[in-house]
Image (cartoon, rainbow, N blue to C red; front, side, top):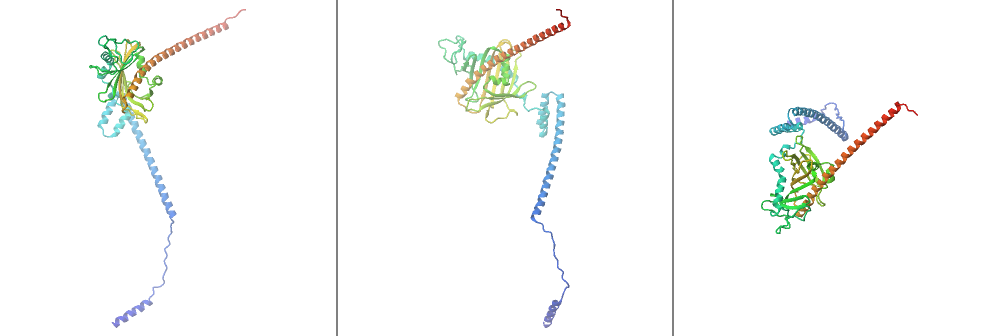
Length: 418
């Protein structure tokens, strides 16, 4: 133990005298960055990234646009080729069949581009031969309804609906009813509704919509031709707005190039405190080659060019069939017509309002149409007279000028003696 203690003491003494030479001092020098410089660096990096991204997106869009234009040009060329090879309707049927078989929507888009069509199915909307045959006989049906509802079975004269109408011979049988308004017979469900001049109107309650009424109108005009009547009925120019005060606007939206049938928009003025009604309708007209009976059929449809409007109530369920039959020929005055129509306004209105609109609207419209036909004929005659008169005036002026030129020429060439 004493030896160990002496060794430890000697070791401490040696370590106190031990040196390692000169000691160098080390210092770390670093460039300190401020926060503003760091933020500026980050901002510049972000702006560069955004700019490069925008340039990349722009170049990508340009490439896509170029490829799309090439595809559309190729589709258009293919469509032009097939339009020259096939008829338009056959081409549309081919595209529809391809669209149903192909799941890829690109083919459907290509078909729409090739066909250059609005997608409206004209063939589906056309009347069938059975419907045409039925509608051509509407006037005969009206004559049968007249016999069953407003004709006395004893004397054969007319029964009164409301008040007497001039130039009509009414029944004077003792048991004759004073009025047959709203009276239906066993063999006919059409009820007499009103009579105005040369117009008679019946109505019946809709089979599936209680409270809604179908209307049938019959009339006979001796001073209007069937051609004039049909022309004014089909007209949708500014001339219609001049005589049809119930129409706010009407215009053709689409036309079938094969048949001439149209899809049109029609807005009707309604009384104050009610929204106007508008319609998107398909209309076709035809002529029976056997009897010369003319037919105009309109009914509600849907079309991409006719969306619903605000502040106007769209009528979704509307149907009208007009039949026109000339007494002799279509270019001679004298015709009879019938209109069968129904519309569901989509809202429940009091029956008094519906009746008031029907009483005021239907006969007034037909009488205004009659006056428009007469006015159109008068204006055409006046225009033809103006054309003939102007041509005669021009001929007279030309002859006078020729005479004066000849006279002056003779005076120049012939010597004059005193």
